[in-house]
Image (cartoon, rainbow, N blue to C red; front, side, top):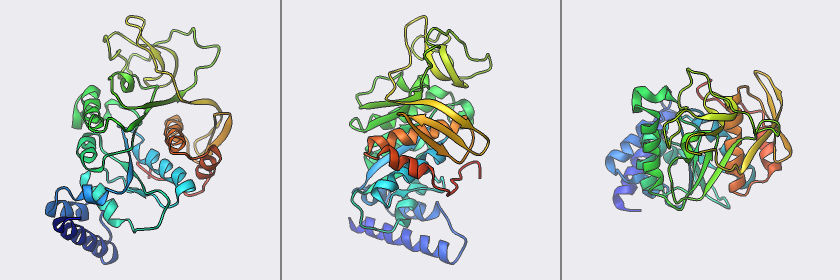
Length: 310
């Protein structure tokens, strides 16, 4: 580590200690201070870590928490940014706050704001990208969904060897030809549904084919624009899924039971969108060598995982 990085790290850690032990805490300022002294301090802080970047418009905090929890079952201590402070300064703070522990594999699971993927990727050289979804609730910041995805793709292009673990039910995520290894997760289409020819509701966003701009059709829809899509005009369709939700056996406002790879899992939170978050975590954990039993144990933990729902 360079002299400048050492000074930046010391200043950042000192401010973090003061903010959390004397005042009421802070998730951004320590990183902002460190980056002021050394704009590339994150490269030094993250150089020994295999980094997983979690991004998308919705579900980042929950997915990041679930991935971290599953990886802990196998690898113990995992560096992450649990507060949801997902821009560069918040990510630097997460590294500054993390105590050094002896582990078999140094892993960092980072929630990253869509527009910050490129800047973070330049410094931490990620091992994998986990892509949750893209909806239009970010238009006030980043414009159209295609603009948002372009910002993510600009980051992914800097790490062509990193594995893309993406929501296959979101048509946008398979629309750009990238050299990266790809893994897709999604909801399995029932045997009696392949001949279905459905359209999403007229007020649903993101239902144009990203290849030819015609209206997408679906064999099955899970919610909004997510599902087993296909374009009758150009032939574009959902990619082959590596990890599939096979069955939902229970769904209440506070608990969901579902089946993946023939095994039942449960999470203590409601919402179909949270099944996608759990499926993303399952896919990522499996790609990093975590067993289905270890994932089930992680999902079953009673610790509440907050995010925007807090």
